[in-house]
Image 1 (spheres, rainbow, N blue to C red):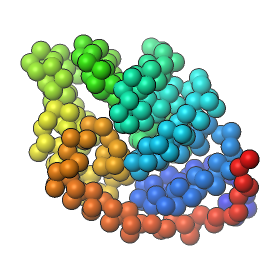
Image 2: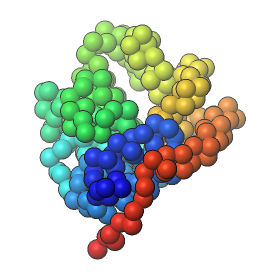
Image 3: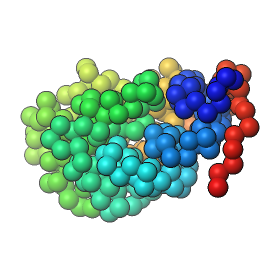
Image 4: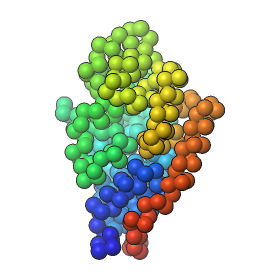
Length: 278
């Protein structure tokens, strides 16, 4: 950045490092600078929406997600992220429109159906390539299922889970027959535990298995996992737990971790004066 302050790749690498280190302050500063230099870069609007979504700043995330769709209306991941933000804002109807559009664009290959928050863990230059990974598209289908469930369409929710997690179809069907939405989530969480481990926290939450949910969240916290930001600040599956003392303690501890990390990566990223947006 010292040699080329407008270098979008350098910005994204440093942004990814900052987020993984919980330094959201530096990540946001870098993103704002990068967008001023490259206002038409759809991957930057995607990352900005993702960052704000993780931080629980859902209105800011919505603005960036909508801008991203305007910049690239054919990239399914943009529609997925717009759907997730709407879902977390309590707007399942709008979420469903965006998520179904993402599924339409992705086609049979599931290409570009990506759970946005997990993209931070990878090289930012692989944003589009990441979209083809089945594990990421499965999480997008999980959110599609949540939108269907919130709209009272439980059969469609089951079908979305089956499409996203075909290797666990037997467990999903068994859970559905036993206890509907709750049963599906609990069965899927246990069936996929060996592969996905603590990523099952949202499914345990949706199933009402609070002890398993807290165990997973506490594992995230122990390793300072940046995905915890989304879980604590915005994730729709945890809404029913946010007033519980144990959940509040997780939030307080994570806020302390974030405060301790603030500005840590700024010294690696000289912040030159960027042009103003028109």
